[in-house]
Amino acid sequence: MPPSPDPVWTRRFSDEEQLALARDVVAGAGGLAPLAGLRLAVKDLIAVRGSRMGCGNPHWAALQEPSPLTAPAVQLLLAAGARCLGTTWLDEFAFGLAGENAWGGTPPNPRAPGRIPGGSSSGSAAAVALGEADLALGTDTAGSIRAPASWCGLWGLRPSHAAVSTEAVAPLAPSLDTVGLFASCRETLQQGMATLLEPIAPMGIAVTPTVRAVGWIPELWALADPAVATALERQSRSLAERLGLCLQRWPLAELGIESPERLQRLLEAVQWAEIEQSLAHLPSDLPVGPTLERNRALVAGRDRSLLPAALIARQALQQRLHQLLAPSASGGGPALLLLPCTPTVAPPCGSLGLDRSRSTVIQRLLQLGSLASLGGLPQLAQPGAVDSEHGLPVGLGVLTHRGGDRLLLELPDP
Image (cartoon, rainbow, N blue to C red; front, side, top):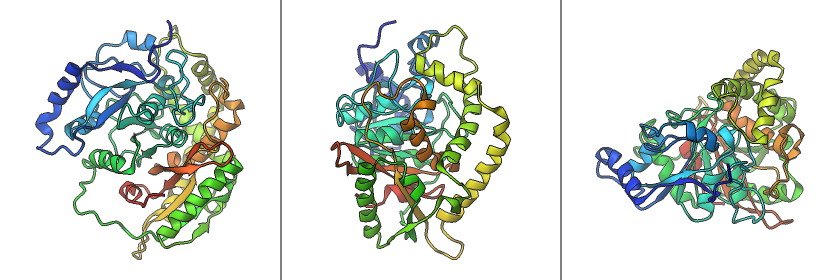
């Protein structure tokens, strides 16, 4: 099957289809339309009524019936006035971080021409970066919103686990999967995420808690290329100063973790076990791209004996992260943890290869993304930094305690 003629959109909806989707939800809008006029793109593993969910594989899409329903996350945004333009490309079945698809090609990165946008939510990030959409839904399991946001110079939020419904979303690793948004400006991200978070905890009168501490973990910052680290350190100090605080050094050992590599091993032990189950339904003769084929071989050959201990270690890590970041029982406010979203600027197209086990960029991405994923924590990708070596964007990751999503959205601009 030849590549798609459109490297961003797997399917663009006609005006009639857009209106039909809007009519489906208008009765629940309550007369309020905070997202009126905003254009929405949807990653093609999130159900949209009448569209075949392809999960980045056209052969799989051809086997599907048009979806009879629209995922709750999409419904909420439509009910708030957004207009759904269509569905976007991704790494096949969301198992990847490069954004390069054997069937659809590589979505363009207008902030870094000739370089990858990052994945797996590559088409959604590209749609916003190109100005073809104002908001785009993506999913994030191990960095699939955070990496594209960083490399495309976008705002992005991986929300707290279970803060946004994953109903009618194709799973990858359910205990790690989240649904979040990309936007080109903070205000649009705030509006979109307020809509998605409203059913979980109504907004009411917003009272932003006082941040008690801002910290960084030196072992994780050491994963970043020097020019990236320098640019993001300036942004980190600026954010801390705006909050009236000084950056604190928090060694990784305070979380009971001896090294970034240990974080990656924990993540993969949990993630790969769940991925094997999530993708077990795929037909054995389904054509897949070489990257997914290699990734599935890694999953099949993993050491299964590591999972029980990894689950126990994840629970202990979650408890330590809560102690470090959550508001204290004595009334102290929450804390923030800052780290690079990505260790490098966007790599050139085709440079990461097919084997993630041999890619130091992918390994460092996973190590940087592990804390939010394993902890179920919200992480904001805050743009604004440009590395001095290439002049390309990189994003600052800002984490806080589980349930602290609105705090991240209300932080000052970099």
